[in-house]
Image (cartoon, rainbow, N blue to C red; front, side):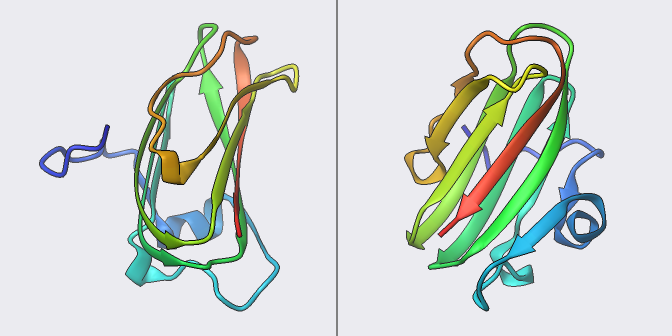
Length: 125
C-alpha cells in the first residue's frame, strides 16, 4: 500500500513525462491534469500507481512493464471521488494476470504469467 513518507524511486514518471512516454487516448474533456498528482512507476517487476482528486475523468493510459519472473507486484494509492478506473495487466502472451478497479486499492501480486514485456491498461470512466 502507498506510504506517504516513502519516496518513489528516481525512475518514477510524473505527469509531464507520462505525456511523452505513454500513449494517452482521450475520449472526453475531463482528463487528468497536474492537480491530480498522477505518478506511475513501471520499475522492473514492481508497478506503483498514485492519483488523487479524480472526479468522473474519462481517459485511457497505457504502459509497458518489464517482468523478469512469472509475477509482478502492483501498489496502488488513489483518491477517486466519482467514476471508475479499471486497471488491466496482461503478460507477454497477452493473458490477463490482474484486473481490478483502482478504487478497490487491491495491492499485491499479479497472477502467474509469462515473463517479458507486460502491458498495463488503465481505463478511467
